[in-house]
Amino acid sequence: MKALCLLGTGKYETTTYVWEGSSEKCSYETHLFPEAVAHIFQPEKILVLVTPQAREHAHFKTLCERLGNLVERVDIPEGKSEAELWAIFQKCTETVTEGDTILLDVTHAFRSLPLLVFAVAGYLRRTKSVTIQRIVYGAYEARDEHNRSPIFDLTPLMDLLDWLSGAEALLRRSDAEIMGEKLDQTHRRLYKAPATKELPLHLQKVANSLQKLSKALYLCCPLDVMRLANYLLPQLDKAVTEAEKWAKPFSVILSQVRSEVAALAYDQPEVLDADNLRKQLALIEHYLSKGLTIQAVTLAREWVVSWAIGQRSEGDWLNEDVRKEVERALGAVGAAKQGKQDQVPDWAAGLPCTEQVSSLWNQLTHLRNTLAHCWMRKDPPSVKTIEDKARDIPGWLRRLLDEAPVNAVKANVVIKGV
Image (cartoon, rainbow, N blue to C red):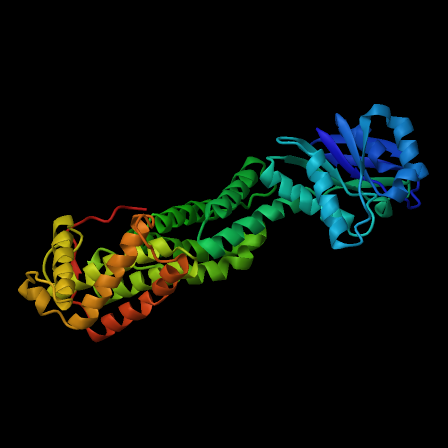
């Protein structure tokens, strides 16, 4: 383990620093907290970040005299400008190597350096697989009548960064992996060492359901999305109180998550009707809002197939052969509108809004093929062109459904349990 400490030029008073954590109780008397770090936490190396003024001060010289080769000096600027802040960032990244275990001490830091180094530590944890074992602060100002100063464990602040990452991933990309992990870890931690008789009953269930829903979203499984979202809604309602008590970062975004889930929930996903198609349309809009263009276009094309089956009012709408037959019929309608010779089935020729349907089908097929074949063609459209066209899709589908509602068709399937 390496300790990353900051040392300034302030007036540091002698006190007995006391650590009580993880069933350990240690103390050490000194006016230089990095010395207490050395004796209490016993790192293999102490990396001391010092500005030019701190490097020449008696504090640093005394520390080197007392700890000898344990100390390694890291020269940093004062951080008075953006350029100097980036210089400090570079110094920190150079001193920490892949897979290091770090104890971060912010006791004797100057100005905004604790905030900066804390942010850098979080960054390194993600980019270099660095383990932040502890973040500590020697609270001299909280000393007791016997001049004993507690050492505060600020490590939970690093945990907050994980919650932040999880919330961002969930709200921006519908990726529930991190948030699910944090909720599950919270549940397990509380059950491993229960401090009270009251324990969470719903956090772990919410975690599992969120992760399942997220995977269904990314794999573009609309029926599973509707089913899982419908199952998750009451779980979120039951978890409100528990989240406020044990998972506050999740409680802050819970109402927003619930609103997004509610827009996708449907209790009869096996029944093809107008409500089902509206939920799928909401899912397409959800995909577009999260930048998931491939999923949006893929589902939109299947949406038109489902709409056509609803107009036909016969056949199992989830049967692969039925869907292929309808795809061929829609292709024939599109070809006929372009003046190409193709045999159009009578039911397809009688579809409402044929002009709109043929144009929509041709555009969706083009978009879908471009995405599915990874732009592997001559003179492919730009990414911006594809994204702009994809954003128009919900309007096309909504107009089609409003002008020509479908008849209810039930699939011959059994929807699996959650």
